Image 1 (cartoon, protein in one colour):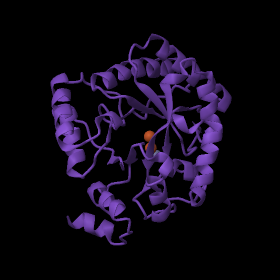
Image 2 (cartoon, rainbow, N blue to C red):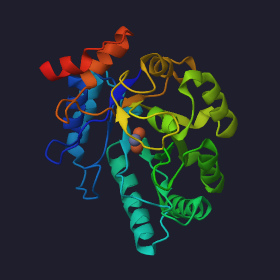
Image 3 (cartoon, rainbow, N blue to C red):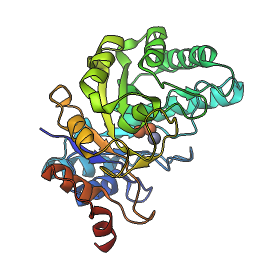
Length: 294
Ligand code: FE
Ligand code: FE
Ligand code: ZN
């Protein structure tokens, strides 16, 4: 079954029920949310009654609950050489894993981190140290999915080898997976005109069994640009055919595909129309205009 969803909001008053309702309004059968705003680390306690309600609604409407993804906030940086920032990131993630569990979710996507000038090797050591510390004390069974990064600034995780180096250092490897972001790998230099070769490389370096989530985004920039600017499906430099190829790839069949494409004019969520277009398998050059007119 095609598992297709998008990033949806999570608000304190409506909790997980609100997120499910938003996903349903776009015609999705899975989705991704942050346990608060993506940009900050202010978090409220998870409302368990809303979680129960959300699960009942998902069951009723056919949303595949065990493929729903949680994403950690951007500010978290395990690669930081700044003690305070590092410890804050560890503590936050420890709490976040508990929130993910309270939401009865299984996967937390995490940006590995940015070394901010110390170099990939030192940054990687910090990430490993952080993950080992967190997982040593953690009592949940949530899996942390390290995301492939575009290599913007000093981001670590821009090659499969960099992710592999992190995984190799983690003691509880069974708790680690990977989230592949099409915009990020394209911006990092991987060629999505030849996705089979990319997947083969992923399999050889990391192992396909670790791949548990795919972020499907087009890119505003050329391959290798290291920019990380998402574009709507089919309107960027990756292109519709290449993205369809990822979405419908046989080897990725049971993996949730999550859209993180930009709102049109920063105002109109594109997901309902993008999902329709993906299911019709036919590119619609007027899609963005239609989204604005809905
Ligand atoms: Fe991400
Ligand atoms: Fe992403
Ligand atoms: Zn991105």
